Image 1 (cartoon, helix red, strand yellow):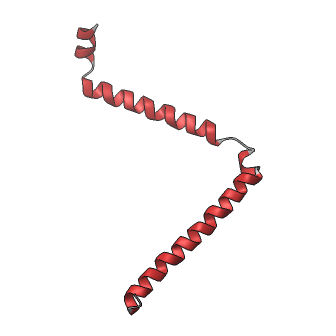
Image 2 (image 1 turned 180 degrees about the vertical axis):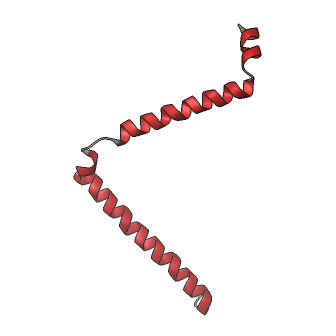
Image 3 (image 1 turned 90 degrees about the vertical axis):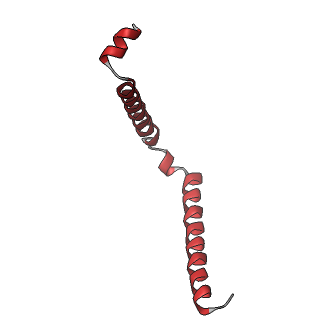
Length: 75
């Protein structure tokens, strides 16, 4: 059996085929998990999305303020 695999397929090709198969399985599983229809309508999920947006706005504002403080010497 080992001699058969060695003649037909190099280890590199076998690794590439295995990796490709693994990635295809991961994509299929991700689509199945992401296709839940009630997850977008859950109130706790919507609250989490709103909090994330508020935090991102605060972080962007802080980063923008750091640039102005450096330029005008307010440190």
